[in-house]
Image (cartoon, rainbow, N blue to C red; front, top):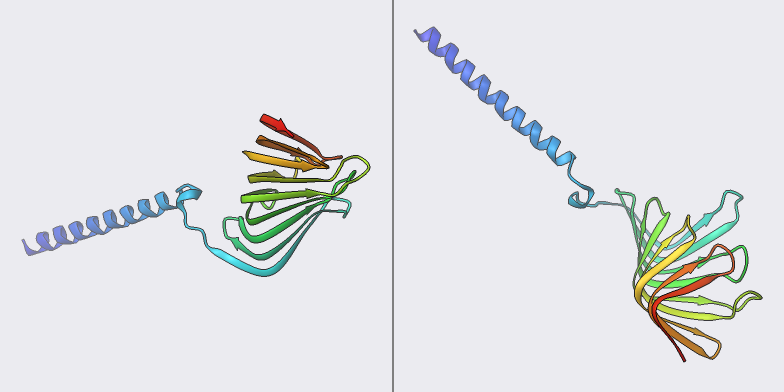
Length: 185
């Protein structure tokens, strides 16, 4: 009888151990399949007074970012503080975009300029000088395109134009389009 009880106790403890192990394994599997937004971000590098240069396949500089601080995270995003971005174009003068905070995404192929954003363009043969102010501008470097849904003001020569939302293409001479409620004075 003692032998049967000891075998039953061993089977019960073994079963409890296996159930505990399976429960722990399920918990680990569920945690690893959590969405990116549920996983904590960890900084793996931090740079001060950073200079980020992006060139095309021919080695020609297309984008130059200067920043007070860059924090790179393990999820392949970066937070940039005190940023200015110079966008060189094939035709026309470069654009200078300035923002207090920028998030770089998709292996630095996209950026979100948070808060107040200033865009300056010097005069060229193709375009007059322009000074643009907007908010929360997103940039797609591969498409050479910037966009904002916020109220935007464009100052060019002696004219001031404002509206809601803006598209900017910088794949040649700069093209700028206000999306709605455009007014000029």
